[in-house]
Length: 258
Image 1 (cartoon, helix red, strand yellow):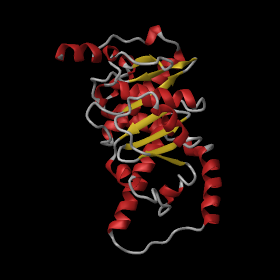
Image 2 (tube, rainbow, N blue to C red):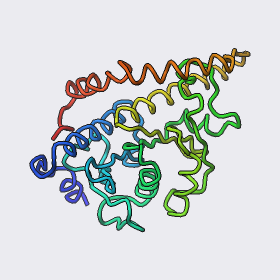
Image 3 (spheres, rainbow, N blue to C red):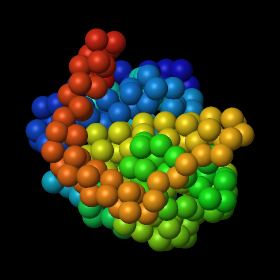
Image 4 (cartoon, rainbow, N blue to C red):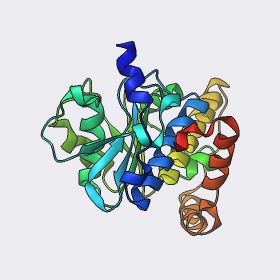
């Protein structure tokens, strides 16, 4: 088993075997795994981040199941056909990851990256009847952009795909009750930043509730004003932070690029 993990991790570079767009997608996705490790979102080898393959939209990239997040690099990501009716786990892709990510990417042509974690604060807020409340600017960023999905057990039944996709709808965040959270985006950067922000928003809500004091909620008019501002911000300089995250990773360990 140990030798098998080394074979999955320490693979030769495939940079010359894929086109430029796929290689960049691999680098960005590997970076997302490393960032999840740095933010302490990783749950051992479990949970997944996926990326649609550019120029090959029926396929997605995902980490080999046995690898830790800080072992993922561009070349050892696994390429999976999302149209399969099932996945052979001997291919080193676990069934829950295939089911969840494949289903969302099939349903949402506008989504290229899905980010799934079991962040404790997100599970706690997902289990509250009112879900995420607009008690901070970070939380307000998700106004009208969150769906909720009831727990059905381990996500390995292909029939659950339709219900997950329906509950996400055209939104970009899905709080999975008793389970975790999924964020989606057109890019790895978008899905990552949404994960960072939803984690912060949930953490702040729990802190506020723990204080046991009444809190202020913005009016609907203010929430709608912010929603318009956010759209403008995100299409401008608000998306310029991804290279900075990569520079930070390069300072720690640049092997994700290999």
